[in-house]
Image (cartoon, one colour):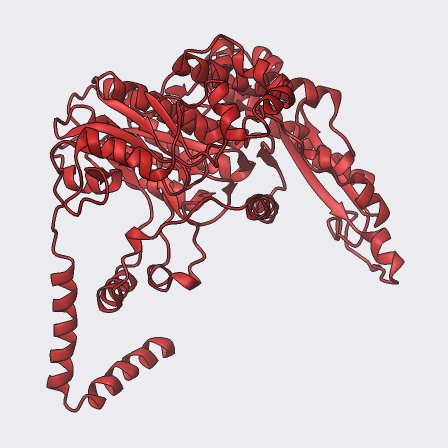
Length: 609
């Protein structure tokens, strides 16, 4: 209460400083009036004959994290990386293909900083559907990474800057191993796991990848590469296996191109024309007209197009979309993690909403806390007990805990390139008694039972404690197996054969029975509507919302100092920064380990870019 009174006193002091209370209130009302006027809805218009510009910025994700509104105003202090919603990209293309005002699609991938394989394939499929309308698609970026080229390859014409290149390397997974370092500091990392292929703990107990992990990883990476290559060669009318063959002869082909990567891409049929920006821009101007200032081609950005075409859907039936994105952790948290209490709250709100017809659980998570995973699954079971159908829709990753929360859904849908499975569980308890001994620090004392102080990191784990933990891990694995068996109508023995912590891609998981259907998010939504027996419905995404007061202040400052955050452009990250952010993600993953029982169902190999 003291803090509240301090704020109240500050407000009254401010009003008194203005001269009179009446004048102060007048100023406040004027500020609110300015805010209301500046935020009066003004729907943008769609120019006739325009080219829809698909220019994603930042990482492509399921749900965009709301940045701090004040950080957005003072951009120099903005620590939130840009993001683009995969659903916004798909909605724009789906609407535009039947919109007579839109004549073509131009794709710029230079600002994409990260995207999972499943998202890339989904966008590629959206582009192919757009082309079915007979409208042209152009890729007009300066250069292409392996990820962004999958999208660009779907275009009717691929432009690239003469100074650019197309960098294809295939897929690989090379984790960092710490055993020798841990040995040098004499740290004891006590590992408890179940599953032949549960390789998440290997960096702590080995200096290299085990043969079993190599076998499993090569299998799913090979399938992902086949899917990638098929998509590209089909779009570019290349022979089957052309990319794999080209990768084997890069040195010779590059020598023939005189060391010019752009010429190499042209010679191998990956791009159609090497052209600077003004050249392809002029070609589009000649074909589709110019902007009013005559500086560029007739166009509309896909986010502006969405704002111009959004219409409220009026229907009493709602399909609730609950997104599980990021590591699964205990407690509350933002959209970047699957925080159990937050997600459980969304599910409870949805099942208690009389308009909810069904629930779609959208999963993009490598797992995390086993306990948190079970809390989320239990709430979904409660919704099913009320008669609501729960349909799981797997995005890029739905592995370990991400599969756990979905195991007993009424249906599971996955994309062919989804990374899933990893049905296993492990525990890690490090102790540092030898490390501390080196610097003269020791732990000693008394306890009322043999277990007192058993988990003190300054003391070694005794055999009884190790036995207790291993039994708990084995019980967790049996629980996981039984949940999958129940949900997928399989025997526990059959599940165990394809579990063991092994990772599968969606197409293989479908063959094994871990997934009911192959399809994208829209397919899962339609399945939810069918299961609920409704023809008309609206999608409702349950998620957090920005602070309204902070947003009002930020909007006022925007209008005052003339900054339009929507026009800010963030280019591609440098390789060093990208690597640093990946290391930061790995560190944050371990810092998020907060399972009260110390049991984790998580897949470290599941992030393939």
